[in-house]
Image (cartoon, rainbow, N blue to C red):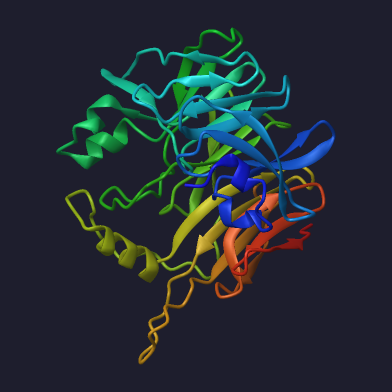
Amino acid sequence: MKEPETFLKQKDALLWLPISSTIYDIDEKESVLFSTNGGCVICSFDIETNKIDTIVAGIPAKIGDFCYNSDNGTIWVQLDNRNLNLWNSKSCTEISCPSVKYHEEFIIWACGAYNTFFSNGDILYTGFFPVKSLTGFDDYAEFRAKSDLIAAWDISNPDSVRCVKIFGKRPSDQPKDMFIKDWYQTAFNVEDSIIVAGTELSQNVVVMTMSGKTLGEKKLSSKFYVKPQKRDFSKSSSVAEIIEYCDENMLFGGLYYDRYRKLYYRVLDLAIRKEDNSFTKKKSDWVLIVADSKLNKKYEVKFDGNKHRGVILIGKQGVYVRTVDNTMDLFVFD
C-alpha cells in the first residue's frame, strides 16, 4: 500500500482507479474521485491530464465506499471498520449505524463496489445484508430474500441518520435456482426521480421511483445474449470454480445513467472462448447496450476485450472507456 504523498507523484493514476470511480461536478470542474482498496484518503483525478490532482479528504479509518452529495458538497463515506459507520467529510464526524430490522432480521449497511451507495438531497441510498450473514446462512435463498436491495436513510441531521424505507425487488426473470454473486445493480436518474435495477442473470430491469414505488419492468438485453448454464453456487464453491463459470458464461456487468444525454447504459460481459494451444488467457469481449430515457434500446456496441475494459466513466464530454493500456478513450453516444 502506497502512502497518499506517493499517490500524488504517480504519472499514471489510472492504475489506482477502482470500478466504482465516478465523475462529479465539483466547483464547476469535472473530477474523478477515488480511493484505493483499504485506503484512508480520497483523491481527485484529472481525466484530461491523466494525473492525480489533489487529496480531497483524509478519513480516520479504511474506506469501504463513498459518494458525493452535490447539493451540499459533502462526501459520505462508509467506513470499512467493525461497525461500518458513516463519516461526514464536511462536519468531520463519525456517525453510528442504527440497528434496523428487515424480515425479522437485523441488517447492516453493505459496502463495496457492487452495492448501492448514492446520496441525493437528504436521502442516502445503500445496499444491505443481514447480520446473520456474518456467521453464515445454511439456505442461500433465505439470505438472498433479505439482502442486496435498497435501504433509504434520512441524513438531514449531519450527526445522526435514520432508516426511512427498505424497498426493491429482483426482476421477474431472475432464476430462482441459480446463485452466483447476484449483485443488485442500480442506476439513479435524479432528473426523473427514477431508479433502475437489475442483476447479473436478469435480462429485465426493474423501474422504481426514488421513494420506492415499483413502476414495472423493461427488457434491456443484447442480441448476443445467451442464457448462462444452470449452476447452483449456494453451497461451498472454490473461487476458481466461480471465476471459471463467469468466464464461460454471459453476465450483465453494470447499469449506468447518463444525465447529459438522457441515456441508460448496460454492460454485458461475453463468454470467453477457450483457445487451444494458447498459454495466454483472452480478455472477455463485452457489449455496451444503449437505451433512451424510457429504457427503449436504441443500439449496442461490441468492444474487444483485448483493447477496452468494461469500465466506463460518464462525463459532460461523453463516455470514457478504460483501455487495457490504462488510458481512456472517449466515446459519444446519442
